[in-house]
Length: 263
Image 1 (cartoon, rainbow, N blue to C red):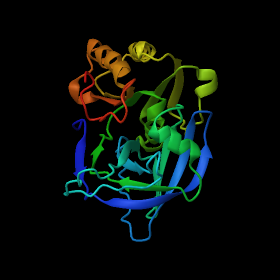
Image 2 (cartoon, rainbow, N blue to C red):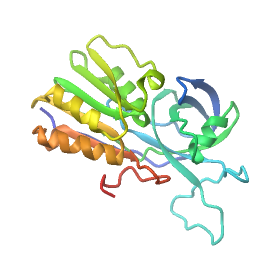
Image 3 (cartoon, rainbow, N blue to C red):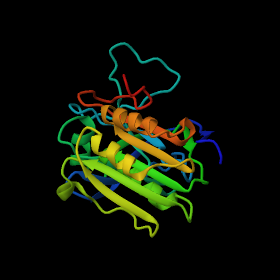
Image 4 (cartoon, one colour):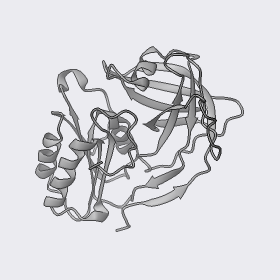
């Protein structure tokens, strides 16, 4: 089997864009299609780089001004700072558009902006700086996520190689209200797990009994992902068959998802 992942670098682009389409996929999940400015570079889309993300630069919550970063330059003292949040690239339909899904959790800059977004709402789009491409030769892909990583679940279901089994488990507080449609795939199973601390995902992983030809990919709240990572290690999942990411942490705004889970 190949190594866990390969890395592809991309040039950094800072783009102006505006919302073109708004779709509510469920009570808490909103899909936004962003139309890039005519002179903006396309957002790269690499198959099996399921965790690729862009930074959205949001209008200031008070002034409404859109401040874009200027890479390679220092901010002037007292100048407004960009409001930046990371989001998984759900799709790139063409060179002029990119699609992201946003959880509406009722607080925070991004949730407030997305809840009010309408066609014509301005936004900035940065990156991605690189792609981490997952191997395409595994027998099973075991995906353990919370709703912040639902775009990753959809991408696995769409992009996992033909013949591979895909098992997706999504932890939500109430499966009866939080479950949303995901892409159909004949050799896949999607399970909605009730909980908020990762324990249900850890039990689900134990039930799956990951083997040496499987890949375990997990993302969500950092504390919950610690439980998943511990379970995977206890089950003997090899380091080159395990990817665990802390997309956010309770009580922390704009957490860097590259930071260690323990931070």
